[in-house]
Length: 212
Image (cartoon, rainbow, N blue to C red; front, side, top):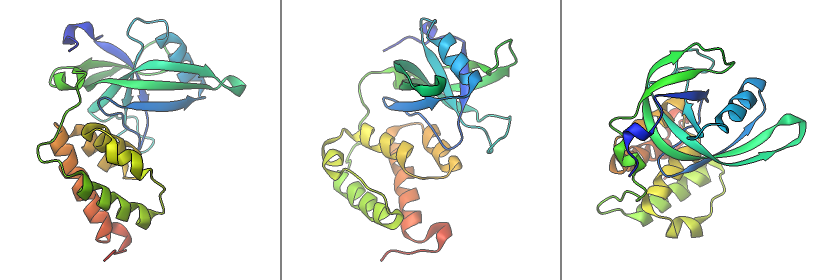
C-alpha cells in the first residue's frame, strides 16, 4: 500500500460536473481547453503525474466539492486540432483543503489524503454476502427504462468492486448523486447507496415513471 507521505500536498485540479473517479477504476478524458492542455503538459513532467478530478458544487460554480479523487495519467495520445486523449488510473480520494490561485491557468489544490488509505491498497474490496444476480437484474431493469445498452456477460464476471464502482461512474445519475457515491466510505456503503438510487429510479423517481 502506498504511504500517505509519498503523495504530493498540492495537485492540479480538473473540475468536472457529473463525472467522478472511483478507487481502482480508470477514467478516459478528451482534453481540448487550452488551460487543461497546459495542465496535462505540466503534469506529464512530474513524478506523480496526478490530476485531481473534482466536481463543482453546482454547474459552473467556482466553489468545489470537498472530496475528489486523484488519478495518474497512464495513457496519452494526441488527436487533431491540439486535442489530447488521456486515461487516468485512480490513485486515491482526497479532501480539498484549499484551492490556491497560482501563476498557472488552471487551479491547484492543497489536499489531505488521510482517511482514504484503503483506496491505495491494490487489492479490490469485497462486500460480505454480495448478491451479484440481484444487482444485475436491477441494472437490467434500469437500463431498459433509460434505453441503455450494457454488456451483461462482462458484468457477470467482473470483480465486485469494479462492477459497483464502474456502474457508479457510468450510469446517468445526477451530479449530487455521483458525489454521494464518491463520498461513500466503503464499498458496502456505495453498494447500498447504488441500490437505493436504482430502486428510486425504478419506482418512478422524478420522472414519475414506474416499472412493475
